[in-house]
Length: 287
Image (cartoon, rainbow, N blue to C red):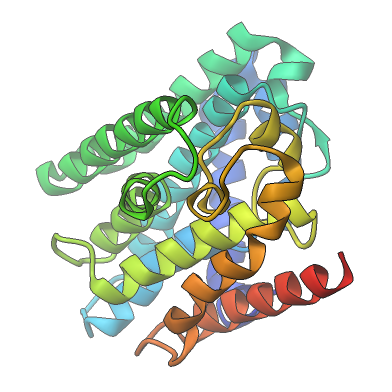
């Protein structure tokens, strides 16, 4: 169990239970079996994104309602699941959380419809608040920009600029972290400590995918096949597996300073990312 999951066990269990309950009660019959299939692996998630809602409210010492924080965690979980479905379709990823990706099982049309409906459900949960509705709209913009930049980066010469990769990470992982923080009561822009956690998460996902150890999200096959501009491409002269593998130490060295001290209020997140960094270092030595 991850440090985040261990510290926020009750909260994450309630978020997952409410998420699944929404699937049962509000997803139409034509999409229900597809939704239930995709969410089979929900218990395998690290819980970073919904936990950030609760953590932010605690860090800001807000007089929050616990059940409301659970609902806001559900919002993050729903839009995260929708983004995973879209990512898998765009990257043609065959698997997700140890099973066939939903688009491989149900087809691209139903998978796309499901992603749209999950976003709709999230929107209904925040529609009472213009501020939270705007936060959700901003996430959509962040993800679109991140995906478009990633597409552009597939054709750029290697190595790619570090600032270019950071921009992708800030819009992709950072966009979701930003939404979670805003749902927890934070204001814009993204807190510097949370930005560092987003860069760490995104960068370690890139490295762990290539090494196939403790993967956070996807897998190396899609990254290699589609020339996805990962952190390794910042330190690699070309797109070959051998060059990307040789770039792992430099990528880990770039991330290491962000792990020197645990950011206030985010200790469990820092512990999980530090453990992933150590796993990647060990796998590099064994490669």
